[in-house]
Amino acid sequence: MKKSTVVISLILFLLIAAVGFYIWSKGQVTVSPVTSVQEVSMSPSNQESSSQPEDDPGGCINSDEYISDLGDGRFLYENKELAISFMYPEEWGNPSLSFQSEANDPFLVGTRCIVGFPSRKATMTTPALYISSNNFVFGAPTDAWGLDANRVDLAKSDEELIDQLSFPWTTAMKLKRRKISGSEGIVLEEEGVDPLYNENYHRFYYLFPRYDSEESQNLAITVLRHTDLQIFESFLDTVVFY
Image 1 (tube, rainbow, N blue to C red):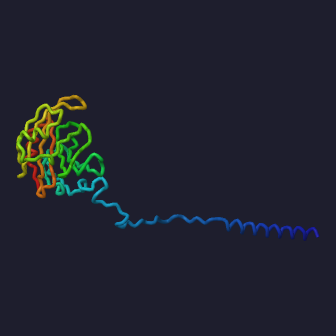
Image 2 (cartoon, helix red, strand yellow; image 1 turned 90 degrees about the horizontal axis):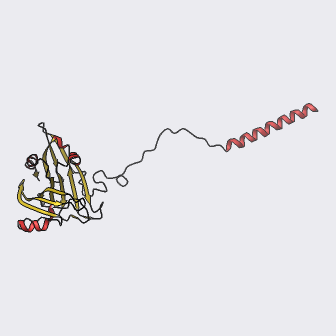
Image 3 (cartoon, helix red, strand yellow; image 1 turned 60 degrees about the vertical axis):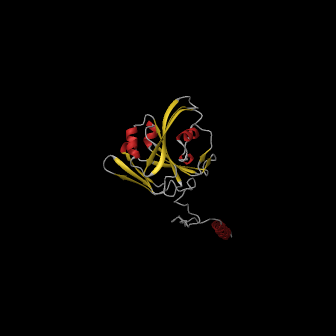
């Protein structure tokens, strides 16, 4: 009798264990190893445009620009979007583009592309080229350079242009007419006192309104007095407008 009780107890234990294992196994989640990552289809509706970033609605940054080594210590820069090409010495470094518009600056109207050289920040002896739309206006109070070629009316006299383009802090200004690649422009030589730093300055501005074949772009080039003007004049002689 004692032996049969032990057998029955053992059977009951095994049954209970089996039922418990079944219930426990049903509550487990099977985790399988990850073998691949699903690819996301980049259709035109969800793919970012590579031709015009948000801060460059005018296409300036991604314009068709080309730089060629001429093999004589000079490089040739060509930009079809900006309708300009020029040669520059190797020591200036390759130019880069930046862009300004009312889309990224509330003080602006119109658009402006800036072609600058890396050596300018270190030495301030290389030119900067400002290419603006006909309606460009920079309305912010600033110490930044503010002359743009779209403000130039070549039909006015030299005296009228000097009066129009002088700043309140200008102490002296000279003007002469200049032609580049068949386009008429002016050269301003200005002396003044910087209103923020109270320092004297001496600058040159080369302004060519509506220089391109469509008469939709305006070129302004800034040069500081201590720039090697002979090298700069050689640079100007290579500028071609389209």
